Image 1: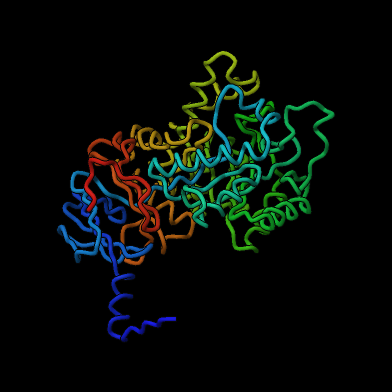
Image 2 (image 1 turned 30 degrees about the horizontal axis):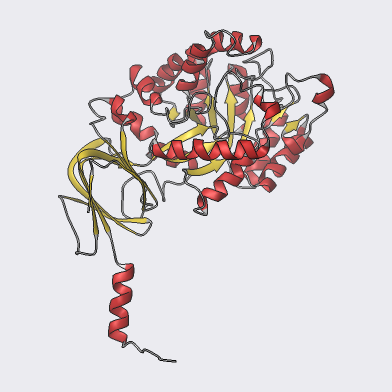
Length: 433
């Protein structure tokens, strides 16, 4: 057997070339989301999964380094959507699919939705409830088996019997059974604690409760409170013991107030939020995730004959379009806001629409982008890892073809997507050497 020995200097040179390759991203415009301003002619240097520097001017490294020419684009941190449902997507057959789709069907569909979301520029999402497939999908993406955004997932939402997330709503009585905490249905404090613990055991990163009725469930009411205060307190206290947050789906005001009193981390939707509730949220530091796009979408779909069952149609018409007005009031009052859309209620990949709706009622363009980057990272408690383009952060980087500070609609035109240093999308007209 022939043995080849390399000298120390040669081995060091080989290893150095292998591990020192960097990527230089030359950005014509770069959005500084920490200070809400657009910088010109910048270079981001990426090594492995991380950003190692961000500097003025167009820089390049050695011949072995890669240059990505985004001089005609606007570069920004990877976007974050704090409220999606990656397992499903709206359609006139969505209620029938509860009975016709197997778990494998849900899983294969979710692969498509996850990749679509990533290609739309969203490198991190919070999945706000599904069947448990969302947990497996999160793990598959993290392991590099499939393409998709980084997922923070709630697993299965928690509701009382007959509540918005009771999975047996609207089915025949012989199919209803009596679901309990193991599937997120609770009645009383003991059930509340067990349901949280079960979701943590299943692998959930965050707990989602339906603090009020909802629009798309086949149940009569869309806004009344659904938890007693002691049940809410028990959910939040138990989650806090595990070091995880609780998010509250809520349309009605009373359910929001009970949630804030209990110490909820975020209010989702917030349709009928009063000024009193806004002030309570400001005092408590509670986040608001508006999901305007979902409201606008369900109101539109409700006008299509047969798209929704009759109870859902009535709620969609009454509640849907109000979210944008509430968002405008909450923003002007000073409530903390993180970007969220409820994608799945409308087609995945159209998440950009939220930027348009937010800016229509007074939020400046760059501040809207900030809610989907830095603010999302803060909500997750991950601001030391993601959300800004700075040295030491994960290389989650996207680019759009226009200038979103001048025209927010260009957020639809994502031409480049990198997550943790890996390029997933690069429109051919943009240079890469």
